[in-house]
Amino acid sequence: MGAAYSEDLRRCIIKASQESSQSVRELAKRFEVGKTFVNNLLNRYKQTGNLRAKPHGGGEKPQLNAEDLDWLKAKVEQKSDSTLEELSQELKSIRGKEVSLSTICRALKKVGLKRKKKLFMPMSS
Image (cartoon, rainbow, N blue to C red):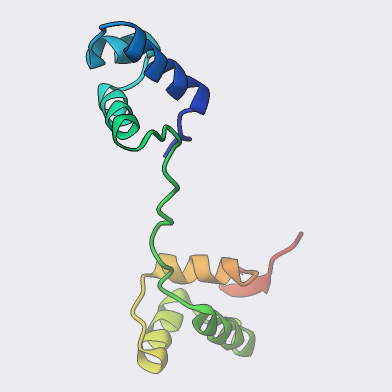
């Protein structure tokens, strides 16, 4: 997802819409933005007087919490030649969390471990 349009551009669009009788489509073409963006911006400005970008929604919550990550790290330190599949099965049976192998791989990277020839090792700097 790209960055929000600048306030300066937003101000220019609002000003142009107030000073001219251009349609939303014409304004979008003139400023090289989407017509939906222009329409939403104008409606929001009319309703609230605000032209700033809305804050980011935050995304999805992680499937594995801090306790799960600590458990996973301890498990790998205890038995460093565990496969992702083995870790997945143990995570499901012991912790009750069913996640993909990709999620486990990302979690191991998050706690500072990486996979190298069937061994999980601390990441080098």
